[in-house]
Amino acid sequence: MKQTVWKILIITGFCFCFFTATAFSITFERRQDQFDKTPGLFVVPAPYAIPGIGNGLFVIGYLGNIAETSADVFGMGFVGDGQGFFASVDELFVFPEWSYLALTQGRMARFGQNVYSSRGMKSEKNDFNIYVGEDFTFYNYEVVFTHFERRIELAYGFNGGNGKFVEIKDYEGELVQKLGSPIEVDFAQKHVQLKIDLTDDYGDPRDGLNIRILRDRFPSVNQGAAFDSMTFALTYYLPIPENNTWAFHYFRSDAHVRQEGNTDLESLKTTQGFYACGGYAACEAATLKSAQNRLNANKNGSSKSLGGADRLRSYPLSRYQAAHTLFYGTELRWNFSTENTKLDYWLLQDVQQALQAVFFWEQGSVAEEVGEIGETIRSSYGTGIRLVTKSGSVYKFEVASGDEGAEMILFFEYPWIGLFGS
Image (cartoon, rainbow, N blue to C red; front, side, top):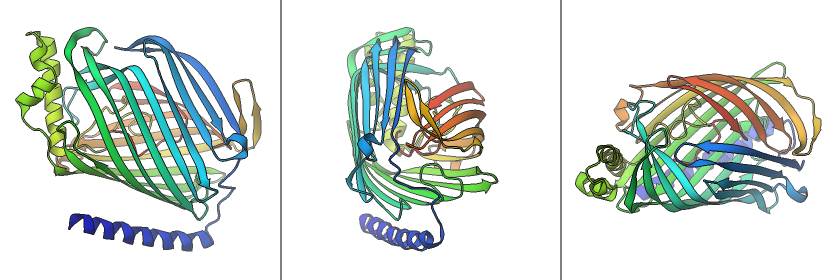
């Protein structure tokens, strides 16, 4: 019965959005070509030092609109203590201006994940352990149908990954315990996403409304919960003369459990390595917290997290997570230059579309129970500068501040865009 209701809602919503976009496209003009083929190139090498992982060098590379097509390739390679690679191909059109593929593949010989003392909003800044893993592989494959100059898009995809945790370290990266039996990491999901873009430009909007609805479906893996996650994002762009915009964003994500996973704490303590700690208190404390977090995830499911370059930018990636997420923010984008200027350097080749100063403020909350959402709130605020290019990239440098200090952000797209991830 529930599946039938979902199908009816999705079909009805799609039909409504289809006719809305059709009617809107008659009166609302895009300000430039939505399938611009301007080529772009960007390469940057940089050293890294990651607590718990080590030191090394990574190289980021981007090729945009390859061979006069809309296809983009992005890659990142690591050498040193954290060896691995990440590669993606986006907008690989199967039918020009109608449908395309987005493909991502990656592998890391060594990786880390911060495991906080609890899910929700009550953990402290340094109240976490770093779980260090090996042989992590991941993928994401997606097909997208687009129409009306990209005003409406429907995407279907699936992603997953696997690896194993082999060490526990403290928040400074000092070894707590080597795990005698590795903890398996395994996940998989399918998703359907609807985008309605009623703005003046798909890649660099300055006027209009953008709506996105995402449904993730998670099967039970390794005795975890089987659940769905529904995510809704709305962004309104208020134009400010000349060529500037004031953006307002609302985001909500909720998990709905179909079948609970393993909620026996003693069993979860075993799988998380508690009884292999040999009585070492720091190890037992870390594995107990991990087991309790896993119990909550198996009981309630997980919505989208807060933290990182997309939402609540002054906090680390996936800093806050629970079953329900609420987020809203505002951002003033001041384009102090909108002249098309050719960029022809050794490691950067493109056409500058805008140089942009940005000022932003954000707030967010997560909770295990829907009635508790908003009881505890965290904020971020900051400023930065961005280079917007005709090939479709947005190179940004930002500094965000919040209750736990400041974060520096270097990234390649506008914030509030991504709906995937944990």
